[in-house]
Amino acid sequence: MILVALMPAMALAQEDRPRDLCADRPGLGTPACTVDKGHVVVELGLGDWTREQDQASRTDMIQAGDMLVRLGLADHLEAQVGWTAYGHVRMRDRVSGTVEKDSGVGDVRVALRRNLGNPDGSGFSVALMPYASVPTGGSAIGDGDWGAGLLLPVSFDIGHGLSLEWVPEIDAAVDEDRSGRHVAYGSVAGLGFDLSDSLSGTIEASLMRDDDPAGHVTEALAGLSFGWQPSDDMQFDIGVNAGLNADSPDEEVYFGLVRRF
Image 1: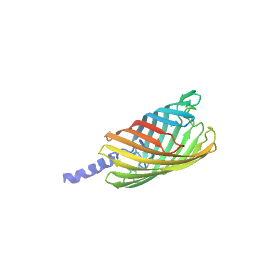
Image 2: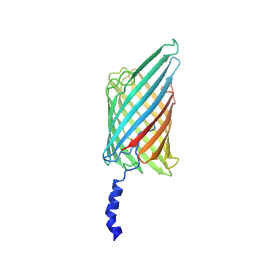
Image 3: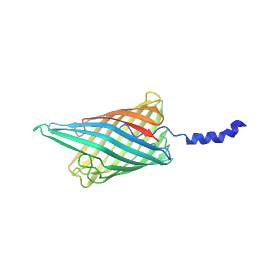
Image 4: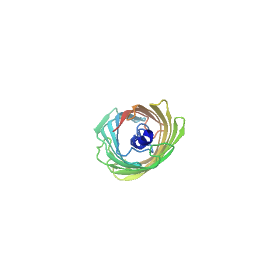
C-alpha cells in the first residue's frame, strides 16, 4: 500500500528530472537535441585561435567571450542568442613585412531549434534550426550586414557509446565586401564516442561551398574535440580543427565551458 501511494510522487519526480546535458559545444556540428523546458544553458568560448596563411600573407585571429545563451521554451523547442565579446585580427604581409591589426566585438545571432523527434537526442533525432545574424559587430569580426540560414541537425545513437551526426546547412551569407548576400551551403558529418561516463569525443568533417561574388570557394575542415562533464550540469571542452584544402583556415584551437541552470 505504501508503494502504491508513493507511485504518483515517484512518477512526478521522474518527469521533473532534467535530461542529459545537451551542449552545442564543442565541434563543427550542431546537435539535434534541445534544452529542457524552463532550463537555461550558457555556453562560453574562453579562447579561440585561428591561423590562415599562404605565400602572400598570414592572418591570425583570436576570439574570447564567445557566448551562447539557450532557453528551453517547450519540450521540443529552444531559443538561442549568441554574441562574441572580443575578437582580434592580425594580418602580416609576408612580402613587405607590414602588419595590420583590428579588434572589436561580434554580431548578434538569434535562432530557434525545433526538434521533430527525441528531443533528448536518444535514438534517431532530427531538428529544424533557422537563424539570423544582426550586424552589431565591428570590422574585425563582424559581417557588416544581416545574414540568415537554416540547419537540419540529424543524429543517430547506434549504441555502445557511439553516435552518428549529419548537419546539412544553407545560408544567405554576407558578401565579402560587407554589403548584400549570396548563397552558401554544405554539411558536417561526424562520429561521437564515449570514453567514460564523463568524457566524450567527436571526430568530424565539414564541407561548405561559398558562392561569394568576389570568388567562389569550397572550405573543407576536419575536427577533433573532447568534452568532460564533472557534473550533470557542467562541461569543459577543447577542440582542434585543420584545413584540408587551400580555401580553408590552416588550423584552429579552442576551449570553453557549458553550464545548465
